[in-house]
Amino acid sequence: MIGISKLYCGTVEPSDALRYERSSAKLPSHLLQFSKDKRPVVVWNVTRRCNLKCVHCYAQAKDIAFDNELTTQAGKKLIDDLAGFGVPVLLFSGGEPMVRPDLPELAGYAVQMGMRAVISTNGTLITREKARILKDIGLSYVGISLDGMEAVNDRFRGVKGAYARALDGIRNCQEAGIKVGLRFTINKANVAEIPKVFDLLEDMQVPRICFYHLVYAGRGSKLVEDDLSHAESRAAVDLIMDRTKDLHDRGKPKEVLTVDNHADGPYVYLRLRRENPARAAKVLELLKMNEGNNSGRGIGCVSWDGEVYADQFWRHYSFGNIRQRPFSTIWSDTSEPLMGKLKEKKRHLKGRCATCSWLDICGGNFRVRAEAVSGDVWAPDPACYLSDDEIA
Image 1: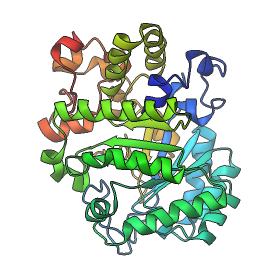
Image 2: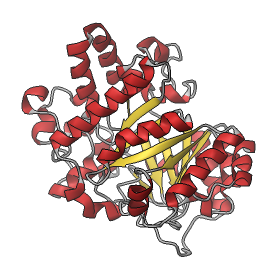
Image 3: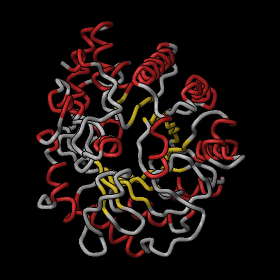
């Protein structure tokens, strides 16, 4: 994650993270990316079932029952292990996590065990009653996916009415007093919607948004040609920075992040170096703390069937199953070839990634995207839009 508001608008300083000793257990959620110990944030895809048909779904979810999902009891055993391992945040995802009747029980149990529980949802199933339940169990945050205004979003989500129901979900969370934000996956079909989404943030008083770069996984693997060109990616990030700064300058600040393309970090720094050199030096310090992509180290994934992955997109390579070994054991086992290399992946990168001057703050970007295009997990990430001069 690259915090545009944190870095470009100066809402976070290096001293903010240092005050908490950069410990995952002590850092508030908005500073967690700057932790030193990199205890993994875990995405748990609690179900593969979903009521929508999103064209980019990495889980290839369907609106049918699956018989291989972890039971409530198995889920609580997983949560016990994650809590003991020091996992600071457990993100409940899917499919659509709200289709699981025991989601409040599981999320509430995670909170009881000392973790921050958040959910990633399409928002269409969050009624007033369910929002109150999520508030009562101590849920920290709800991220609701919107990929444009009504026509674009509903086409992207595959179900007419998804946009209107997602807005109802946002309002219901707000009414219940739960922090709610938006998630937006950028592609050619919706990049023109970014200004309208910023308008929606302001109009609905939504405090946070994450802009996700497209990852070629699941159904998203068919959308490689729908990804932005390098020039379009640069323009999109510039637009996001401009609109974030505009809100900040008008006294209506929002937390704005970009996700899944760590070239954004150096790009923000290079722009600041031209505009505000003093701030740029602080941003470089924060980016070094962030360390870029952390798949297999600072973020991990447990699937609905118990398989453990380097992140939620890397579903074709499992490190093991929690039904046989605890997550903590699987995650710490560097004798597993890929796990061991991901823990020190800068040694294994090839091409322009291996010689890039930003390697320490990008971390080699997204390996699963490189593999999807080239077949080589250590090849350069094709979505890196920095020029040869910029990385020299």
